[in-house]
Image (cartoon, rainbow, N blue to C red; front, side, top):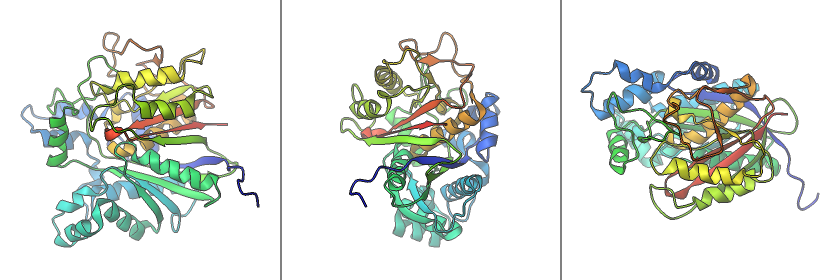
Length: 385
């Protein structure tokens, strides 16, 4: 056997997605194509609703609340089962790569002492792994914790394992639920959360007047398989890190520039899915890096920023964007971005921003990025044959 065998091709054969807009990939996709946003719920709140209640009312997945374990466990299990069903595979024994920034953190305040003790002993990530293995039979290969880049870091590890022949199939899984007073008020004090009031709590990525992000419970899963077959090919993945600032992106975002150089400069990209959290300092810096990496293209890539509709799922956000890119391939349609208006859309970019949504080829090439606090960064490129 050769010492450096040719890496195997990796395809995405199954999708799972759980969001406040839909308990499944297709319900969420339909809601996005209709122009719905989780912040539409804000109109129903009383004017004096306090910040944590605002965040929960807008960003929670209803069926995951009041669980015997933790909302992240419920969300992750549903996403995993949907992805396995979509791929036609059995979860039992399936090598699984998890990526979260918080894990099952609410279990640390669970009303039952037994669950609190288990969460304290295993940690939020270990608690999530433990319950998912019990409930689904998956075989957890590792759990990646890298802020908002966590789920794409797990994807990178899974792709490499399949490409190098360590396994023929893998599940990449993520879920986040961080609706605690500690996290809501911490993000608020850091200046990255949209004003948590009925009228102000709206995420507006790619807008000139941006107010920060909106927390959301999100879960996503993909089944990866080696070789030919139906489903988009996962062409490449990359991860990088930088040490500059805990919250704000480093000037020029060198980690993102590094992976953008690897993923974008040698191919034509049709659609970019930026991290785009809607914070004041991030979006223009990120778009400048991505614009530079795609400057060789005659036609600029289209942009789609899902957080304006779904909110920010922290470590889950990258894999959520990947699933949405796969759904865009299936529907040949990018959803609208109704929070953008002619007078409130970033102007200083040649990249294509279409607030009303647009058609895209089923055979388009999509690039997905996640850039988290403290410089954790990851990306992926997919293409449908």
